[in-house]
Length: 170
Image (cartoon, rainbow, N blue to C red):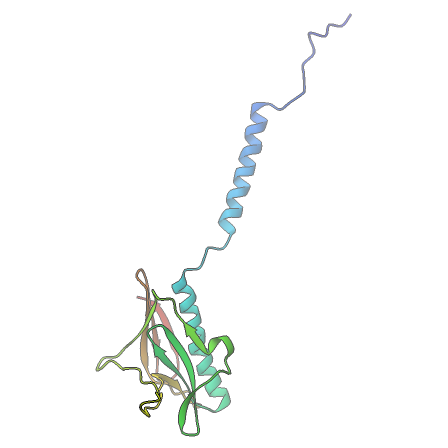
């Protein structure tokens, strides 16, 4: 005669099994969360965009045989091309033709002797547009230091006379 009181019930999980399962789920979740890309800060996006714009202007000027430059204002950088004796806006770079910065970001040209003021052609005066940074077909560039700043961080762009671009955190 068999007693029904002596049988063990296998219905359910033990506390140890549940804890092991929760540990595995937590560990997997932490790996997934840590592998997700971080949100890029606006200054990082601006740094990447400005560096890409500088290098694109340099490379296109050498391959096209035309002089290209960047008109640098506090909250934007625009591509110019030298045609028929004057600097004109160039739209052939698509989204890289004009780099617009957020209000909390600013581009500043650092020069040892004087600060260069941006000059724009207006209806009232016939003042030509002149880029502060330009590259010619032979690879020569204007040597400049340009700083991209925000409240928390700054990047320094050193452009050498041979067209080399060095970016550093300031």
